[in-house]
Length: 154
Image (cartoon, rainbow, N blue to C red; front, side, top):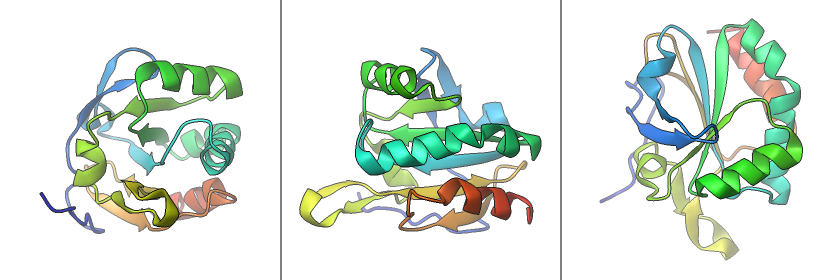
């Protein structure tokens, strides 16, 4: 199976994944809200921690724009719980241990010296379930700011 490339204007691929709250979450649960879906390589690593902490510190600003943040990595439930607890993250992280959702969104590929794996990509999905904005090769520092600015245009 090749990696798909989800583009702006596409219908966002549906998913059902376990969240850091122990419940199953589907994309359709967020219909009527803008959803910031961000893919990241690994819990509690430098870049991923910077990105998660920035999202967490700006979550009120993001929610004030009618949006919700969901992080996705292939780490398991226990890893996610430790990550959320350690940094007091204020949003859900979803577990995709098979990487099926990660691949479906095209957030899987060559990570240079790290080999194949999850790429740092973010998708803003609009209230109707379409991809409104795609961020490729995300720099974790300042990413939450970029998302807030992009949400104002959606």
